[in-house]
Length: 130
Image 1 (cartoon, helix red, strand yellow):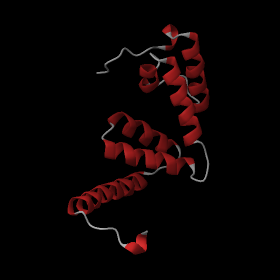
Image 2 (cartoon, one colour; image 1 turned 45 degrees about the horizontal axis):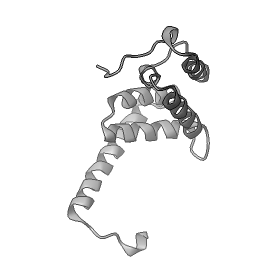
Image 3 (cartoon, rainbow, N blue to C red; image 1 turned 180 degrees about the vertical axis):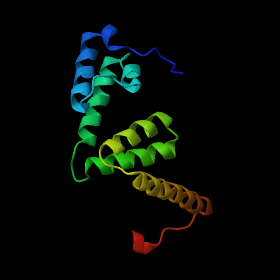
Image 4 (cartoon, rainbow, N blue to C red; image 1 turned 90 degrees about the horizontal axis):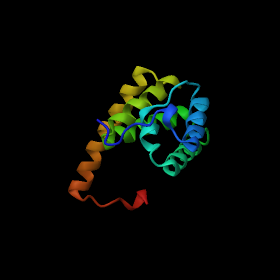
Protein backbone atom coordinates (compact mmCIF):
# COMPACT_ATOMS: atom_id res chain seq x y z
CA UNK A 1 0.00 0.00 0.00
CA UNK A 2 1.41 3.35 -1.00
CA UNK A 3 1.93 6.05 1.61
CA UNK A 4 0.70 8.73 -0.81
CA UNK A 5 -2.42 8.76 -2.93
CA UNK A 6 -1.74 8.04 -6.60
CA UNK A 7 -2.57 10.96 -8.88
CA UNK A 8 -4.54 9.90 -11.92
CA UNK A 9 -4.33 11.77 -15.22
CA UNK A 10 -7.80 13.32 -14.91
CA UNK A 11 -6.93 15.01 -11.61
CA UNK A 12 -3.32 15.92 -12.40
CA UNK A 13 -2.04 19.48 -12.55
CA UNK A 14 -1.27 20.75 -16.06
CA UNK A 15 2.53 20.44 -15.55
CA UNK A 16 2.04 16.85 -14.40
CA UNK A 17 -0.12 16.05 -17.43
CA UNK A 18 2.67 17.30 -19.69
CA UNK A 19 5.06 14.77 -18.14
CA UNK A 20 2.43 12.02 -18.20
CA UNK A 21 1.89 12.71 -21.92
CA UNK A 22 5.64 12.51 -22.58
CA UNK A 23 5.87 9.21 -20.71
CA UNK A 24 2.95 7.68 -22.62
CA UNK A 25 4.32 8.88 -25.95
CA UNK A 26 7.85 7.63 -25.23
CA UNK A 27 6.58 4.25 -24.10
CA UNK A 28 3.88 3.85 -26.72
CA UNK A 29 1.20 3.27 -24.13
CA UNK A 30 -2.07 4.80 -23.01
CA UNK A 31 -1.50 4.50 -19.26
CA UNK A 32 0.80 5.85 -16.55
CA UNK A 33 2.32 3.46 -14.07
CA UNK A 34 2.02 3.92 -10.33
CA UNK A 35 5.61 5.09 -9.82
CA UNK A 36 4.94 8.28 -11.76
CA UNK A 37 1.52 8.72 -10.16
CA UNK A 38 3.16 8.75 -6.73
CA UNK A 39 5.86 11.22 -7.78
CA UNK A 40 3.20 13.54 -9.23
CA UNK A 41 2.64 15.03 -5.75
CA UNK A 42 5.85 16.98 -6.44
CA UNK A 43 5.75 18.13 -10.07
CA UNK A 44 9.40 19.25 -9.99
CA UNK A 45 10.52 15.83 -8.71
CA UNK A 46 8.37 14.13 -11.34
CA UNK A 47 9.91 16.25 -14.13
CA UNK A 48 13.49 15.82 -12.86
CA UNK A 49 13.13 12.05 -12.47
CA UNK A 50 11.53 11.61 -15.90
CA UNK A 51 14.26 13.72 -17.53
CA UNK A 52 16.93 11.63 -15.77
CA UNK A 53 15.29 8.37 -16.89
CA UNK A 54 15.09 9.55 -20.50
CA UNK A 55 18.73 10.61 -20.49
CA UNK A 56 20.28 7.67 -18.67
CA UNK A 57 18.19 4.91 -20.25
CA UNK A 58 18.58 6.24 -23.82
CA UNK A 59 20.81 4.35 -26.25
CA UNK A 60 24.48 5.10 -25.70
CA UNK A 61 27.64 3.11 -25.15
CA UNK A 62 25.34 0.50 -23.57
CA UNK A 63 22.30 -0.61 -25.52
CA UNK A 64 18.84 -0.24 -23.93
CA UNK A 65 18.47 -3.97 -23.17
CA UNK A 66 21.76 -4.03 -21.24
CA UNK A 67 20.63 -0.96 -19.31
CA UNK A 68 17.32 -2.64 -18.40
CA UNK A 69 19.17 -5.76 -17.27
CA UNK A 70 21.50 -3.68 -15.12
CA UNK A 71 18.45 -1.97 -13.65
CA UNK A 72 16.94 -5.38 -12.83
CA UNK A 73 20.19 -6.48 -11.18
CA UNK A 74 20.45 -3.39 -8.99
CA UNK A 75 16.73 -3.51 -8.15
CA UNK A 76 17.00 -7.15 -7.08
CA UNK A 77 20.02 -6.36 -4.93
CA UNK A 78 18.31 -3.34 -3.36
CA UNK A 79 15.13 -5.33 -2.77
CA UNK A 80 12.91 -2.97 -4.80
CA UNK A 81 9.97 -5.13 -5.82
CA UNK A 82 8.38 -2.39 -7.91
CA UNK A 83 11.52 -1.69 -9.96
CA UNK A 84 12.29 -5.40 -10.31
CA UNK A 85 8.88 -5.99 -11.90
CA UNK A 86 8.89 -2.79 -13.96
CA UNK A 87 12.35 -3.24 -15.44
CA UNK A 88 11.94 -6.98 -15.98
CA UNK A 89 8.86 -6.14 -18.06
CA UNK A 90 10.84 -3.43 -19.92
CA UNK A 91 13.71 -5.86 -20.49
CA UNK A 92 11.36 -8.47 -21.90
CA UNK A 93 9.88 -5.85 -24.22
CA UNK A 94 13.42 -5.14 -25.46
CA UNK A 95 14.18 -8.83 -26.05
CA UNK A 96 15.30 -10.30 -22.73
CA UNK A 97 14.54 -14.01 -22.69
CA UNK A 98 13.82 -16.14 -19.64
CA UNK A 99 17.27 -17.70 -20.05
CA UNK A 100 18.87 -14.24 -20.00
CA UNK A 101 16.90 -13.27 -16.89
CA UNK A 102 17.87 -16.46 -15.08
CA UNK A 103 21.53 -16.05 -16.00
CA UNK A 104 21.38 -12.42 -14.87
CA UNK A 105 19.92 -13.49 -11.51
CA UNK A 106 22.66 -16.12 -11.15
CA UNK A 107 25.29 -13.41 -11.66
CA UNK A 108 23.48 -11.10 -9.20
CA UNK A 109 23.36 -13.85 -6.59
CA UNK A 110 27.01 -14.77 -7.08
CA UNK A 111 28.15 -11.13 -6.98
CA UNK A 112 26.23 -10.49 -3.77
CA UNK A 113 27.66 -13.63 -2.17
CA UNK A 114 31.27 -12.96 -3.12
CA UNK A 115 30.96 -9.25 -2.26
CA UNK A 116 29.83 -10.17 1.25
CA UNK A 117 32.66 -12.70 1.60
CA UNK A 118 35.32 -10.25 0.42
CA UNK A 119 33.95 -7.45 2.61
CA UNK A 120 33.42 -9.67 5.63
CA UNK A 121 36.93 -11.09 5.43
CA UNK A 122 38.43 -7.64 4.68
CA UNK A 123 40.55 -9.13 1.88
CA UNK A 124 43.13 -6.59 0.63
CA UNK A 125 42.82 -5.70 -3.05
CA UNK A 126 45.60 -7.15 -5.19
CA UNK A 127 47.93 -4.48 -6.58
CA UNK A 128 47.50 -6.00 -10.07
CA UNK A 129 43.80 -4.99 -10.00
CA UNK A 130 44.54 -1.34 -9.30
